[in-house]
Amino acid sequence: MSGRAQLMWDDAVTGYDFGDSHPMDPVRLALTMGLVRAFGLDGAVDVRAAKATGDSTLRLVHRADYVAAVRAASADPRSADQAYGLGTVDDPAFSGMHEASALIAGLSVGAAEAVWRGETAHAVNFTGGLHHAMPGGAAGFCIYNDPALAIARLLELGAERVAYVDVDVHHGDGVQAAFWEDPRVLTVSVHEHPRTLFPQTGWPEETGSGAGEGGAVNVALPAGTGDAGWLRAFHAVVPELIADFRPQVLVTQHGADTHFEDPLAHLAVSLDAQRAVMASCHDLAHEYVEGGRWVALGGGGYAVVDVVPRSWTHLVGIAAHAPVDPESVIPASWRDEVYARTRQLGPARMTDGRTPSWQPWDAGYDPADRLDQAVLATRRAAFPLRGLLA
Image (cartoon, rainbow, N blue to C red):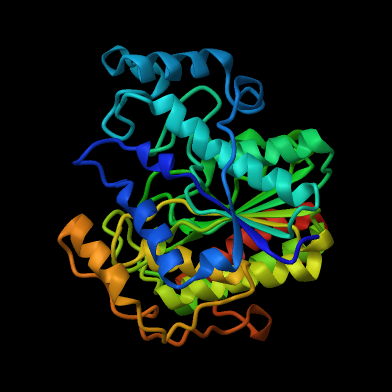
């Protein structure tokens, strides 16, 4: 395999734009790529474009009538059919919606193809991770479900075991739904508890069905969970599952909305903890995945200046085997770009000043602790179905 990671990018992704008042501001994508360039990481990876996903690939996950509805709304936003989740407050229709959404999906599919074919061990598409879209409808700012499409394409190419790990603050419901009965795919989602956050799914008892029973694993964390609890939960569940499943490809989703500054959720995770989980996913790929095959995606994240660009720049650096030192001072050129685009002042360093640590699960747990109760609920619901001890 190539020694260089691939970074999927096309300037046209910023056309995925729900409008000025919508929290998913495409400036977060432009600023992330700007920060990647400011740190010279575009020289440490192969920056690649890809074709927009065609209808035949879209139909690996999405119904033909839904794709037709997206095309129609894209051509005439006023005609958007809300029965498909289009033209709603969360998913307003906009001109070119199909083209922008298919492009983002195409970048994720292209990343998966490159990794599967041995062109590279690691591929990143931080513009992707749109994990809420369902086979027949848009949801949660997501039109096409690019993680599910990337996984479906891997299966089409012959993969027999694909693991998907989602650490967005919201449950990865659309990806789970796409592979609910498919034993070839293991989906693991670590998210805020559905009692307090959209999409109100991702309970520990959701474990898949039929041949896919035990193929869905959900860790529902109490609102307010910070670095120590978030990292403890991740390490209490994810590594053991990946070690047991031994996937041929690891696909991970790194929504930055777990951060304590994010305006749409209620976890209290730092940039430094997010970076630690990215590094752990990279390590898991090298330890348990054939050829270290790793596809890393973005996701949610609505602190579009202070958090998202720094978080995903760390992701690119880790995938490139050129990690950015958290103590690094952010180049003034990028901060000037931030001000020019947003009239906000950008952050000064690549850290929140935290030193993340956690207590390992095998050291024991406290049955009265809400975080430990959440982890134990997951292990008791899902682990025995996979032949693992709860």
